[in-house]
Image (cartoon, rainbow, N blue to C red; front, top):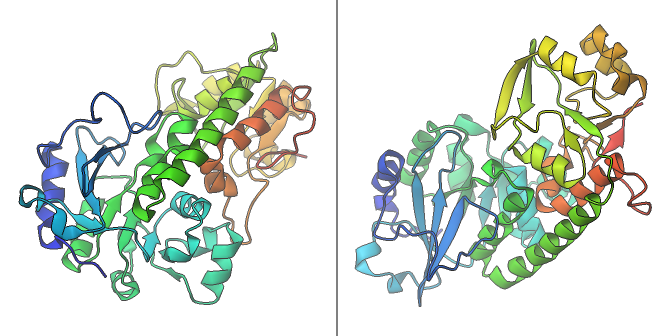
Length: 380
C-alpha cells in the first residue's frame, strides 16, 4: 500500500468538514476553463508533476465543504506547501469501491480487475464482479458505519472510494486514515443532471491514468444523450408523468429541479410536479398526490411493485387511477441480479443515454421503433 502523507489526513479532513478550506487552491477551474461540463461535485487543477483533485459538498446537506487530494506518479514532486493534503500515487492497482456506481464506472474504464473490495456484494449486478466475489477474489467489506475495518486493511488498497450520506461518515474515514487507508469521497449521486452523474467517469479515470479514454467515452455519451433529447422534443403531445410510490403514508415526490424530473423532461414527458422548485424529494400526503395522479398518462418507477396487482395491494384506490386501468405503468427493474441488485442504479448511471432511450420509448413509442428496453419494463 502507498501510505503517503496520511499522518495529516485526519486534521485535513476535519478542517474541510468545518470550513471547506484546505489550501490556497480554492478555484474550481484553471484559466476560466472547467474540467467538467455538467458535474458540479468535483474539479481538477493540473500542475506539471501532479493533479489537485477537489471534491465539493460530497454528502447530503453539506455546504461549503471542499476535500482535496493530490494525484501523482511521483510523490516526491509534491511541494512542501501542499504536504498537508493526502497524496495518492497513480495509477492505482488495488481499490475498494463502496458503491455499485463506482463499480460500474471502474468496469467501464476496463479496470475492473483492480477492484478488491465492495460493499453489499449481493447487490452487485455486474456478472464479472459477481464471479470474482464467488471465487473469493473480491471481498465484501460491510456497509456504511459498519465497515469491516480489519478486512479493509488486509486488502491493502491504494484507495478506498467512499460515499457519505451524512457528515457522521467522517468518523469512519478518520479510523481508516489512522490505519493507513487512503480514502476518497465521491458525490456523484448528488448530481442533478443525468450527464453530471455520468461525467464522474472522468473522476475515476484520473486514478487510473485513463483521463483521455474516460473523456472520449463521456463525449460519446453526451453526444448521444443530447441527440436523443432533441428527438424527444419533436412530438407536440407530451404525456403527463407520475413517479414513485408512497412509503408509510408519505409520498416522497421528486422535486421539479431533480434528477428524475430532468430525465422525464428530456425524454419528452410532462412531469406532474415540474413546477415545484425543489431539487430533492418532497414529502407529500398520499391524498394530495392521488388527486393529481388522476391526470397521469404514464406512471414510472413504482417502487417495489413488480406487478399491477402488487401495486393495487399497496392501496386499493390505485385501481381507480386511469393510468392503472390503461396499464401504462413501467418499472426500471428489468435488469435485476440474483441478489436483488438493480443495474439501473449501476450501469444506468454511466449510461444515461440508454436510460433516456428507454423513457423515450415509454413516452413516445413511435419515435424509437428499433429500440429494445434495457432497464424498463411494462408492469403486467
